[in-house]
Image (cartoon, rainbow, N blue to C red; front, side, top):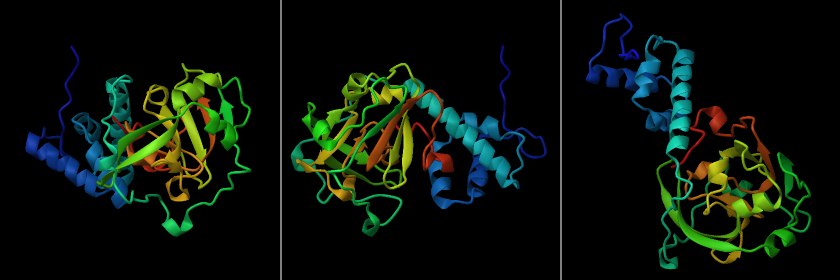
Length: 265
């Protein structure tokens, strides 16, 4: 029979439920970055109480390590619970949010301007056909669209209409190893992120080339962004320049700063 760990205070005394909850709240308050603290606070699980056992709450590094372990545990739990066949809700065009909000780690006046004529999408890693893709080739592929909700970790959401190439089809036609663990993305705005292969193969995961029936505007990620209604907004990279398939954990811009890697449902 496995031993059940109970949260203890610094003096070794077993804590009650209300005291344990306060222990977690105190630990979270000591994480320096407000945005990271808010995100990790939402990610706490009951397993986190055991992970905090024995760490000094006056040691930020110790708390950081405990919170990171909780986040990685949540990644695994979300991966186990993810249903690759369950679709996110879709909506009529009448419910599209206009204007759709701009969101990035920089201001809108800093949006990257990319020349579509010279653009090439690079492929790397566990992919048999690594020939680069031009925009004209991408637009010649079968296209689909969806009206789905974008959910931001900051607490807001908006409904948009995205059109493009089903990512699972794109991976298959390029001979990607579909048994690999990760798909990574590098972007023209220096953003980078990665996703799990089951999410990459989800039928609603798109290489989006249009927004609301028009060529994807620069503010939304021209020439191409990844659109995943099963993930939080920061997992949807814009201005994609390179895609690679790998079994080595790639991390991500926000994920390397402590945000939950799986980032979805």
